[in-house]
Image 1 (tube, rainbow, N blue to C red):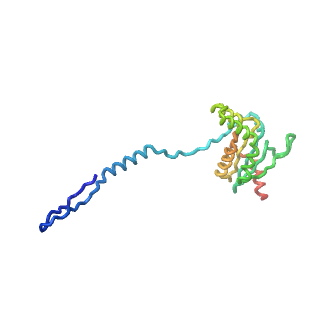
Image 2: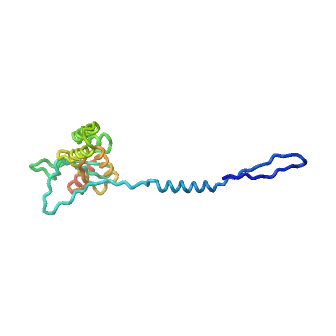
Image 3: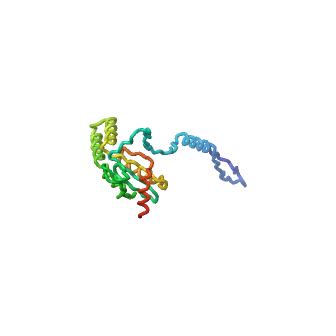
Length: 210
């Protein structure tokens, strides 16, 4: 509210003078309005929630159960200095009747390395998902059917299973980077497991030769 204060005036020497007026603004309603707005924004604001990433950890097999070979498996071995090694298929410390001894190759986190490798490996699965997406956009599939069929494609036994393993010098950032690339390339099957000593020895030998 504003008030107008009369400063007097009157006549002096028989001459009429104009009255001077001053304005005073009452800020009390503005303060009330500010508190109301503050309360409104506090009650309606959405606070940032901590983000989490879902990881799949396999259940440990019983001691007497024979571990089956992972078919179409690819293992990533993460170590220091942002280095990432990999091998395909079952690990073999020595050559046997099923195949030669395992050797590891190296990838990098560059777009032309790990990303391209995953893109090439998952191309058949991505083509199937893309075909389903086109059918969904053309309204040939309902939402629930589309999502179910995408899950089935990702879980297909012909698609690769990725195993992520780290030594004691790898960083969490590198683990997250690998998982991000797997999600970008719509990989449906990946797990984190402990690195074996024979795998760790291969990584150490590879780092030592470079």
